[in-house]
Length: 74
Image (tube, rainbow, N blue to C red; front, side, top):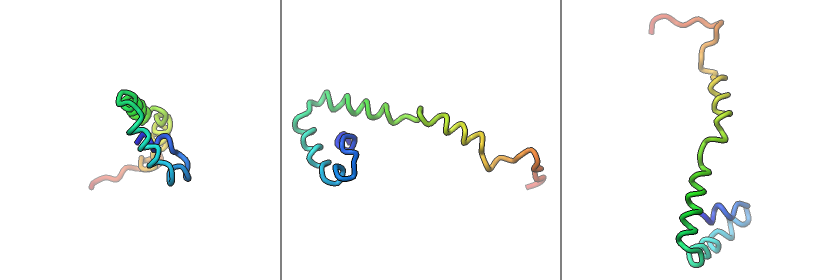
């Protein structure tokens, strides 16, 4: 997963992930690997998307408008 974070381009993802993964496994200490994984997991949050989510909730197309009447019955 760390190698995929490093190799983000099309060419490097197709050709270099295996090499970077091998280098990380063999030459990077376990403590550094764990810190990188913690940083990656913290970046996976939804905080940057909260304004987009709120605007989508406001503009919900499934919600009835004031001009539409509610159906009675089932």
